[in-house]
Length: 129
Image 1 (cartoon, helix red, strand yellow):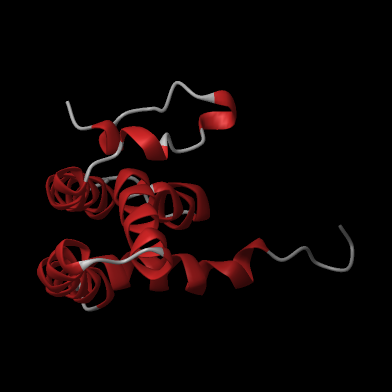
Image 2 (cartoon, rainbow, N blue to C red):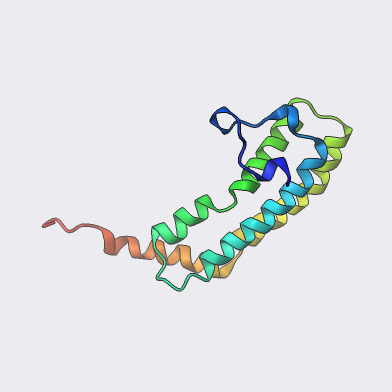
């Protein structure tokens, strides 16, 4: 198992930087994208009426492994880059861009978010309440 795709057993779940190797990044980011896509798919295919909780909150929590792996990678790439890190960045950047586009431009996901937005008016309390 890749160290970047599991819960860190360190104090406050901080990244164990001394244990992370360059070869961990690409597979972790690829796995993170796969998991995040599955989480987004589950949101899209949720048969329940879209709500803030089952759509917006669920989207916020989707992709936690991807967020963690890519954040660690890009922060270290900025702080102490090397040729190998630069090569990895060139490989993962298009993958992350494609994933971002898949989310942003997904009409089914947009429809759920719009449904939540449109329902906000019905959730407002009337002056009598």
